[in-house]
Image 1 (cartoon, one colour):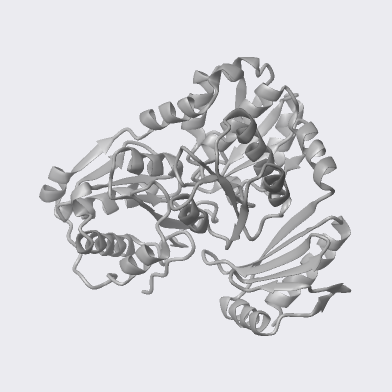
Image 2: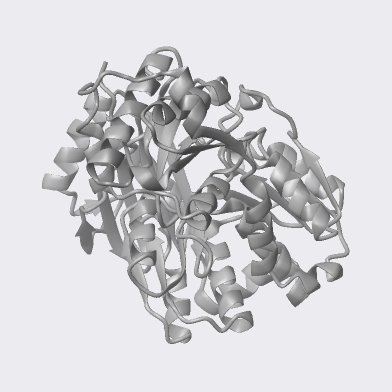
Length: 466
């Protein structure tokens, strides 16, 4: 059975590829990586989300690592990925392991590796772990593991970190209801705990463990949030907030029930941090994001840099340079003076702080942004397709990209992350093959909504045609 790691760990179908035997194999390979690189003495942390069998997979992984004489801290309950990442950094551990498939369908589970700095591992580490797969017999000794494995609370220190990061005095001015949708995911308990300690008035939806995620993938995008939209309007709430399956990403519904694009949110949060914290640092954004934040960066005498999709590319910049904020259109944002990791929990409370501090509704902030930087329309299509077709078409597009699509002349081509086509006038299209699922992704941004729709259809045809 082949085990292949993608942009953010290994994800696979439960009981087909993601089995206890394969999880044990990955655990032993991770042990060999730690030992070969002399990291074993520092120990690791293991946590899990609310997916089917996640606690059992996490326990098995922890027991195998501990059976090899490596100290393991196992979370006492399900928790969010950023909690695990913060724990690794806070406790000076060698690394962390999160059992989660993030926003994938309920049929999947997965494993994410975190490094000592509290963020995703780089490709070099992933390749080193992969190189050890199936090379060493799995060790699982209950007597030895009992000496090295302990159950611990990961959330207490994280909660204190979040509260110290925020200007908590502003939250007393937040005098309207907030609706929170955990999407049946791992953020449900810790988000409520922080909100309660900040005296936020809130109600929750999808606030229970449901391994089928209510029939939707736990990804906080517009199509998956109809109930959050309805409840935000019904409650006359100031905002609706959703976090994904492992709560490292988030989505926002404004007070009118409209979805707020991350292309806009990251700009608002960047400008808010500059104005309220005065911290230095550049901006890093994924290639699937609009350049609005680049324009804002220029106005604030900051630099902005585009990197391929995958937060590890943003993380790499955050641990090697002075970066204030880094984000991707799928809802993942990381911040200076925290951890080089996507954090949907911190992001959502920063948005609440911004609302309370400015006393402006989020829709007004977005409208002001559009007045300053011009109109912007965006959409994304995820199209399931046979992997061999997707890979074949991607190779063709990279070797021979089109010169024109729907009357739009291609002015620039970037092929370091799928194929990104620029058409001028801030119109662009990115076509990629997912590394976690058998699907093609097409992203389009433009100042005209009709152009977005037409280019999306053309992009899907280019990427999935047989």
